[in-house]
Length: 184
Image 1 (spheres, rainbow, N blue to C red):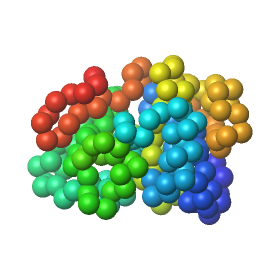
Image 2: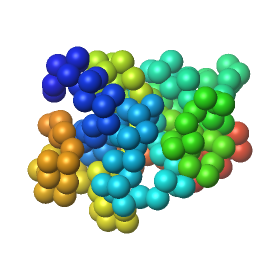
Image 3: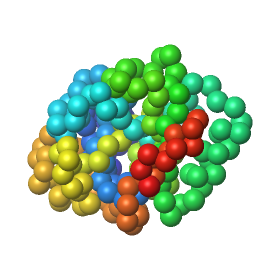
C-alpha cells in the first residue's frame, strides 16, 4: 500500500484505486472529488443517475453524507455490520451537503462499514470514506484479483494488492427506512 500522504494526495487529485473488498475487487475514489467520481464512472461505463456506494472503516467518516439518524437506526445498521460473514450496505437519507454526483437521481445514499481489514485500513489511512463500486465494466463480471483488474483497466487505476474476504456474493443492499431488501 502506498504511504498515507501520497495515497491521500492521489485520491484528492482525482485518482481512482482498485482494492479487495469482502467479495470482489472494488473501484474507489474520494467522494468529495467530482473529477475522481467522473473518472470512475467513465472507466466503468456506469451512468451517474444510478448513484454510488460509500464505504468506510467507521460510521463517523460516513456521517457528512447522511441525514441525522436516531439511535435505533444506527443500532440496526451496526448490528448488520457486525455480522462479518456477509457484507451489508444500507440505503439511507442523504444529508443536504451530500454531492448529487454520489446519489444520482436518488434522495438517499448507500453506505457500508467494511469488515475487510485491508479496505478498512485504506479508509483509516486515507482518513476518508471512499466511493466503492465493483471493479468491472458496467454489466460485466466483477474482478476478483488484482491481475484481473490490471487486465481490465491497465494503468488507469492504482491497484492495491491483496485478497478478497471470501464472501461468495456482493453485499446485501437494504433500505433503512422501509426495511426493503434491494439485493440479497
